Image (tube, rainbow, N blue to C red; front, side):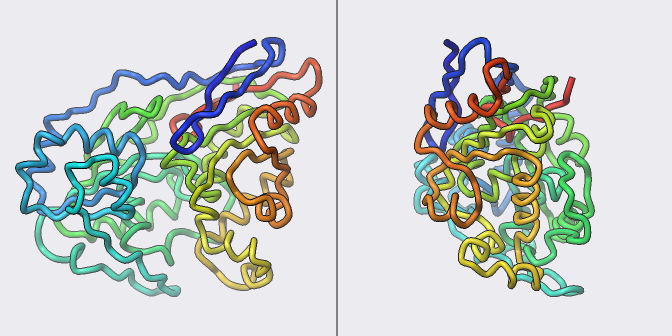
Length: 360
């Protein structure tokens, strides 16, 4: 009986599916890439400020590769949206990372507010990992920098919220224009495979980042197990449901989806938090941050049979959000197998954040 390990937070959970029910499995093994470590070190040395956009394993790997260089960077200012997480992974940076306050929401027509750390002269290096996204098409170092420190209020066009993974959207162009206004800046985007840095792209255009993701041919099955990708990708429910759309071609319409995401940091967006606290009508009336997450959540529940394996409290996951839930991976797999039937196939995507499924 095949045993598959799916990232779940900082650990992995075992998924066991009988051979006759197992469909395709996306290869999540690390791949040899084309990361130019010397160029990354050169950029780090030349920057007066370094902004670490996320705490994904691939981003941390690139930072660890700079360890011999970090001793030469005593005068450099480091910033992160999650300093403690980065410092625990890279002890050489302990006590050296500062945090900036999150960006203020701006009304229609309002301009983003740049902190002095962003607007002041001096070279700046932004480092972050890429992931497909239904609103932006993809999130790279440019978008992550803006979401962390520049502008959340104008994060995208809300008129059209149909998921558009790996398509350059108006929302991406908005973030791209904000990032271009940060003076003397460089953006390094890491594309991961198997939890490891496969390639690091410097100031790469949208299509270059898009083409760096692994393409997985897969015939749609009655059921699918989707692992968000573990720590850095499944920290919140928002991240988990946003990471489904680039692999949705691996399951038939009205099919069954088991979404594996730890969600240790809760909802991940204002709109989802308002939803679980009973303020749905207020969400509908206002253009709150993360409004698209509610749309994606409802679309998934309407079009597919959804099962969630997470660390969210049952009262949130089931009662408030309307997910079917399971207490462990064995129960979760049993439920999805019951849904697809004795002869039904179940595809498995261990790391959805690292690939795009193309139906074959």
